[in-house]
Each structure stands twice: as C-alpha cells, then as structure tokens.
Image (cartoon, rainbow, N blue to C red; front, side, top):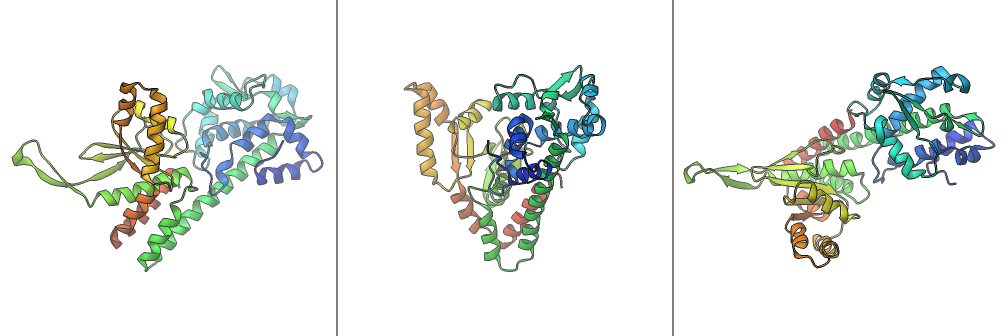
Length: 356
C-alpha cells in the first residue's frame, strides 16, 4: 500500500528503518492519518480535518504519558474525560473554534467509510469518556502511538509554515507601490488549485469591494426612497454549517455560495437547504459562466427526467454564476484604494479563519 505523504514516510522510516512499509500496511490508524493530511499541499482542495485529527491526537497524547507499551494496563482503562481532551484540542494550532462532533461520531463514521472491513470503532465512547481501541495502537507488535503523535505534530508544523507564507505574501503586496503588480499578485492567488478556504476569502474581498460601487434605491414610500451602496457580509467561517449561505447582501437580500465545479449534486443540495431561495454561485473554476450554466442545466434536466416542476424549481433558484473569470475582470476595474482594501480584507479574514 502506497504511503501518500512524504513526511509520513520519512517519520516511519526513522522509527522503523527496516520494516516501515509493513508497519504502515498493518495499521489502519496510520493509513487514516495519511488520508486526512492532504491539506499540507499548496494546491490541495481538501479541508484540514483538524477536528478529526485533533480528537485522535488528544487521546494519543495522554495515552503516551500513561500507557505507552503497557497494553495490559491500558485494557483495564475507562477512558479520558471529555473536557480534558476537548481543552487540549482547543489549545492546538487552529483549534480554538473546534466543536465536539469528532469525538461523538465524525471520526468513527469517516473511519468506517475508509475501512469498511475494520471490526471495531477507532474511538470508544464509554459513558462520556474516550479512548482508542487497542487494535489500532499496535502494529506488528509495535506501539505506534509515538509515531502517530510525531506525524500529527509535523502536520501542524507544515500547516503553520503554509499559513504564514500567505501572510508574508500579503505583507509583500502591501509594500508594493505599483498597483498593476498588486493586482497581478492577487490574480496569481485566484486559480483552480487555490485552497478552498483561501479562495472563499479572496472572492469575498473582491466581491465586497466590487458591489460597494453599485448604488440602489430603497424606501417604503416614494418619499422615503434613498440611495444606498450594496453591502456584502460574510456569513461565518468557511467550514461553518451555514445552511448553504457563505455571503449575504444588503439591502437587496441575495445569498452567495462558494463552491467547486466538480459536483453539481452539491449545488442542488445547497438550493434545497435554503428552500429554493435564489443563490448566486461563486465557483472556483476558469471555465466560462456559459459553460458552467450549460453543464448545470444538463445536470438539472437529468435529475428532473422531464418533470417540469423539478426542473423549474432548480433553474429558478440559480440567480447568477460567478467564476474566476469575473473575479479577475472586476478586480481590474477597482480603484487603487479598493485594491489596498482587498489586500487588508484578505489578511483580516485569513487570520480570523486560521485563528492566527
């Protein structure tokens, strides 16, 4: 079985020089961690999976202190108190906003999906206390908890380096005096390979400033009508359970959802979540709006199978399609002050997202 991440292979080679591959092949836990750590790559589309990884790391951390190479003693253990584990998770890099779903169901659900033949859950919930099943703490007779801890810590270190690389880039952009170069730097961040969270933050910063230049006229009576600028608000963190809403516009009341082009079923699910209220989709693709609209219409036709009410339900709920093409075009139309504001906004929301 192939070890995906180079840093995991390096750690395994250091700990088990002659039989690292056999250890990996025998351990579902090592394989699970390997599958969950793709976010270290600059072009990763994967989430960071901090909730799942930190839930495991918390148990492994305390297990290392108390039960390393003591299987008989561990078999009689009731588990670690939830609050002790949870506080440890929240103390880790990027963990201050984590919730408890990973301990209660997420990890075991993901683990079952990846290893359907596994006989036991990875995390055991014992009356509100948590521990790992001993089957996954040993591989070919070796206690692998220390290796797993090193893998998680290295993953955290790599994420920290990656996060601060973008902050360094933003600082460099702020110091530039040539606005054409500033715009080019932002353009370079707008690609199909940009990490999903970063793309959402950059697209929000551009759209926020783009729409602020557009005026509308609102009032309850002809006498009370007044001019207002469109205002775009970010609905929450990029991994929030926001019901299909990433941005909200005032005063006209528009919903925006940031997504990728590769799963049209998710588009319809987002529409269902907001009860078919019209949504503007901001899509991480260099394809044209026309191409995306054509593909989406074809997918809706297939789902509807000739049923007019279903076809119209989804077609009428797509207010607008915005792709990287439009974001780049609108970026070039903004003033120098607005370009500076975009760079500041990216920094603010990125630090908020990553808890920096």
